[in-house]
Image 1: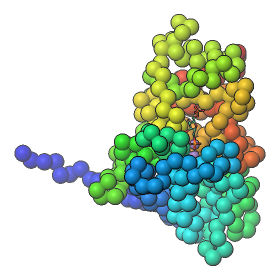
Image 2 (image 1 turned 45 degrees about the vertical axis):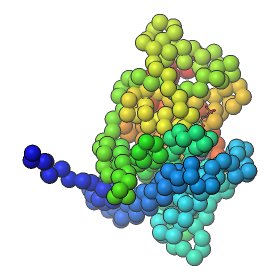
Image 3 (image 1 turned 120 degrees about the vertical axis):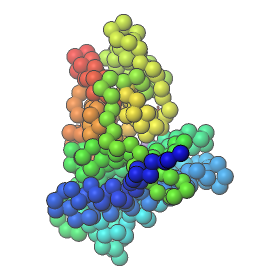
Image 4 (image 1 turned 90 degrees about the horizontal axis):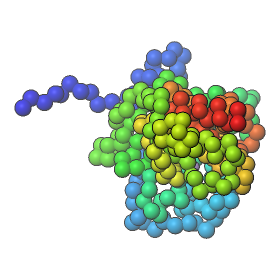
Length: 336
Ligand code: AHG
Ligand code: MN
Ligand code: MN
């Protein structure tokens, strides 16, 4: 049998460099940041893969700034990213879901134009039960004067993002990102240790099959949110029922809906008036990816990407996914 040998294998490094070459004035700095993120992702993937073997399971008996118990892998993932990113001369600061203040670049290292914002390990409460977890990242350009970044540099609306994406540590490890020119997915070849282009130019279906929401908060929802979820589930007879799928790892739920179509919702509720998810580390980056794939992301009224952040760890309700399904949320939540 004659095999087709003409298929070229595209590594993430090659793809990033080729994409950057297409844009005049590109300095290579953004490519460098993305390559460093890919390296950090491989290191975290190794830790996550061996989590059941090594003594890294369970909680570290510390609370993070959100008042949640940190899992050990949260801390390991956070430190892995900081160490992979702090010395390249490409960043002026970082901000992490797991760290209260802005993370400065140490004085001994050069700085660069970008601020990296990240959720080092999303869905970390699932680690003990071997459910997919992820890393989410967002990159904005420094606007303040001086060499070192300031909090104001991190507090930019999502429309200012120059790149964003996530890594999902699932049955395979995938890195999905956008720089505003479509969404591209790479799968880690465990033998080569390379991310290979597997999902070029991802587009989310216009309507979706899946609904991802934690219905155990129903009693705390507003009547509008309740009606919306009933609509999605086909209970008011006005549309076909969506299939409910909720992993409890936003990255995993979002990734499934990105490929299969659907909507992920984390509404505000009486107990959490701003919902749970963080604007800068979770909602903005996934909203950028989703819009670039042809989908939409709103907080119930307006576009997630247009929210002006006022604090590093602020939260927002979110409805994200297929454009037509998110439009239903906008209609029902704004018109009651
Ligand atoms: P993290 O592990 O980074 O704190 O994020 C967990 C988030 C998100 O991944 C998930 O969608 C959500 O928490 C689940 O929350 P509920 O258990 O309240 O549904
Ligand atoms: Mn998270
Ligand atoms: Mn997290």
